[in-house]
Length: 136
Image (cartoon, rainbow, N blue to C red; front, top):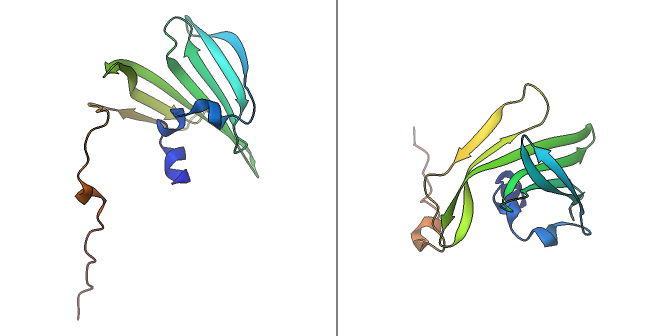
């Protein structure tokens, strides 16, 4: 589950306060021509996390994380765009992820629909029947 949450950028946006080991530092900066507030700190699992919030709307525009490994820090950047209101809450319908190093591919997730508290049929969580190997 931890790997799934780490791999899915939207899960890491839940309960931000609990993710930081101590209160992050705050400063002002720019992304292009947009003024942003930047929160910079270390998460409880030892990763560096920097969040960029639009100074006008308060919406998260970018998240940069750095994971420390034996070979150094591996950076990842996720940019959030196309915010739309769903049931009174704004959600980014596009998330573009990449490592910050030059030449690495960019992964874009574009949502066509987001539903809040939508019912999910329990059958979706049942394991499919095991396939029996063919006998020779």
